[in-house]
Amino acid sequence: MELSRATEIINSLADGLDPATGKAFGQESPYQNPEIIRALHVVIDALPRRLRRTDGPKNTGKAWTPEDEAELTKQFESGISLEDLAAKYERTKAGIITRLVKLGKADPGQFPDYDKYLHKKTS
Picture 1 (cartoon, helix red, strand yellow):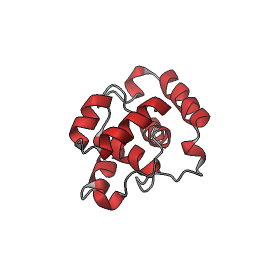
Picture 2 (picture 1 turned 180 degrees about the vertical axis):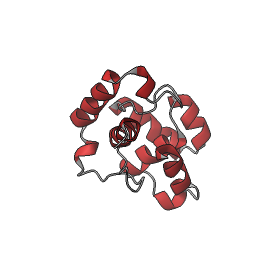
Picture 3 (picture 1 turned 120 degrees about the vertical axis):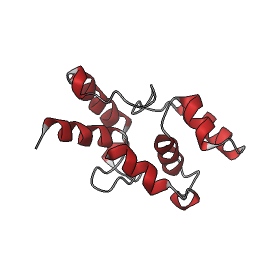
């Protein structure tokens, strides 16, 4: 396996996504456990800069705080667009959708391009 592919897999796991399917792991998954997510990010940060994910918004792959999750939920429920949420939190649309689905505030079927966002992110 190429190191770049292994890095893609680790980034996907740190984002709570199954690297094989691009779908979000369920709440019971170890990849939704904050300590495991932090450990994966420590590993990613230890990689040489050329292997780290450098594209995308600043907060891509970073853990969500409970405060951010509560505010995201409130804003999403008030009708703020995915684009605006992604800009506000400096994350990808896929990251916003995945977090909303994980929190039980949205269903993937609500987003016509859900699969496109996730596959774009992991490819």
